[in-house]
Amino acid sequence: MTESEQIRLLKQQDGSAFISLVKSHQDSIVNTCFGFVRSEEDARDLAQEVFVEVFLSIRNFREDASLSTWIYRIAVNKSLDWLRRKNRKKRFAFWQGLGGLNTSEVHHISSSIETPSSLLVQKERRELLGKALEKLPENQRIAWTLHKIEEMSQADVAAIMNTSIPAVESLIHRAKKNLFAQLEKVMK
Image 1 (cartoon, rainbow, N blue to C red):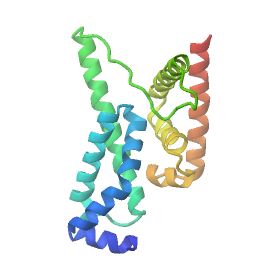
Image 2 (image 1 turned 180 degrees about the horizontal axis):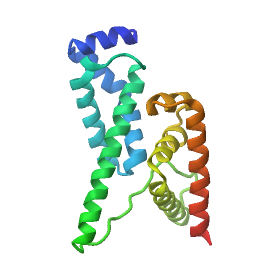
Image 3 (image 1 turned 30 degrees about the vertical axis):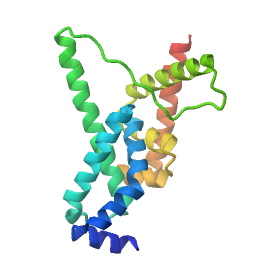
């Protein structure tokens, strides 16, 4: 089935077309959300929200970009909204004296040799990278996550972010520079 046929069926609220769409995009959307929220459970919940949004909004899809680009845009926006809500809750909790939040692991980094000591080192690295990613400006974090963690091309990232490829290249370069600077401070 071509993408235009799939879109036509989706706009007609065809259940089998929607199930097919979910099956073909679910893993990548969960991974994209995970790249932002770093919690598998939250990423799965967000992916469900993404597909509900797709189902409810497909009639408004203008086909300016590919269907997958549009779905990734929704996933990125849902993830960023989730992070904003989380940060508001953190600030509120801070002012109430409830304390901080735990940092969850980024599961994209793995090793072929899994000894207890190597697992501990990996966990520490994931936590350091996660904390450094949280400190990046939002647009740099989006570009870095989509390109480096989700392994999307710069053209796809540009389409999702609704910007140019040179702008994405610049965001990735600045993100890399900022990540190295932050990690260098921690390592000293």
